[in-house]
Image (tube, rainbow, N blue to C red; front, side, top):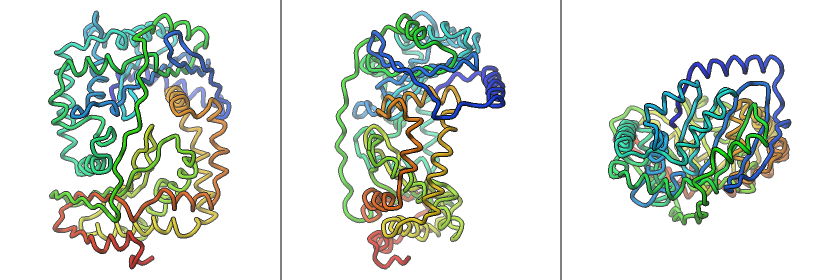
Length: 462
């Protein structure tokens, strides 16, 4: 993530938030969103709040790493980092000085699905900061010298990460699960793929995907919706056009049984990832799956995996599970670290817990705790201006509806024990899963026959 962090601004914001909190924050269901369309085709969502003299703007562009061409993994990320290096008229240094002078915080970033750009600024610098954001989006410098420097930084960061066993496991897991499809590589790319990128690659990616006609803009804070619409249309007219919709990639199914990938490293702790292709954010069972996964491994200390693998067996400091729901089906993964010698037992317990979720309903207490946590923690996700702007982007990009903040608690509270059992049987696949283990393989001595037997539900014991 590339954010021009300004600690003075953050201090002011923190102080203002404390005052707002003392006066009483608005409940989540009171969030009001106005939706409009700009002349260039972009969708604008505005949430007015005049308690603080601050404005946050976030723009989602259909320019995420799922558009990285074959052999050019990391291009979307490098492009985002280069777009943030000044304009045709302003060098990177001169651009930074202008942002810093206003105490604003401006960023450009790229994730798997989308690139995002935006800022947080004091109200009195709203127009000037928006002008700078519009300038880098419509006429970025993209000079070879800046691109060479950012590429070298990205390669250095990747090489440093490649020393970490957790990163090695995650890269191998994604590659084995998604192959050469867009989710098969980290957003940063690999050190080899990024090292081969050049200035023309970055400029071509910018030209093809930084199109505001398909952008979604979220604005939160001390603004008037009609005024900010007029300001955006004046400041942010282009580049126009829209990115053509991307078809869902075809991902090869895993072969029956456990697909085990063992990577030998001289480490004390085995890093384990176990999973399969999960769901897209648009899946209608998303909320039932959230509750089910909270009970399995998403609920940290309240989850079954943490209680059994960590608390009872003492095999891992941390173990968790996640359904990473994206535009297209993302991964489901259980992640844990354990001593090399404990790897077999810890993996066996994970498989057993997944099977147990499929064999009998969860308890009343588990269901009640999961629903209460998911509903109770939801307002904390939209209690700051930056969070509200980002939340509105999610609402539009995934078609959640403008009343989503009010509707969400009802969706979670309606989930039943039978729902949890049904989605566990439908979306958990302990018998057809990918298992990646980065460990000292001599000490870990992974027992593939025993693990396959446990995954199949025979002889694994309960």
